[in-house]
Length: 160
Image (cartoon, helix red, strand yellow):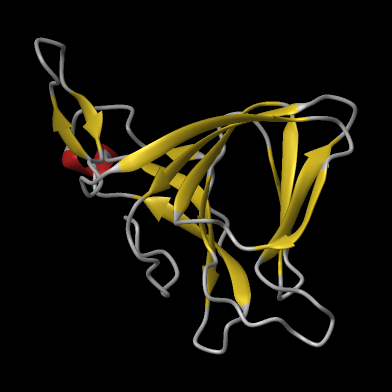
């Protein structure tokens, strides 16, 4: 699996300095099994916002969304479940894990992000459906979730 760091590039203003920002994508294949793939946002454009100096922007598809902040206590585990909608999850503090049906477990902390898109999974013989997630360590995990009101795309790394 290719390792994509949290952020690469973006130091200068030249086209070859375009940043890539890594994220984990939790997605469902055609057999209803969830997987996690390391991906990158990479469609950045150097452009000012308002009267600010130019900055690198990767504008995603516009649509309705719900923003939810959660705090999961130490030891919290959400047993096997699907994300309620395609959603970006960004840990703000503490550490958090996500385990997919294929056995992949990733751990994230502040500044990392995941696109949770494991809707329409099929329960396997072990009773796994979707993913399980939970806190790591003795601190609560504070998360920001941006639930998008769109259907899931059953293809890894489609968000660029």
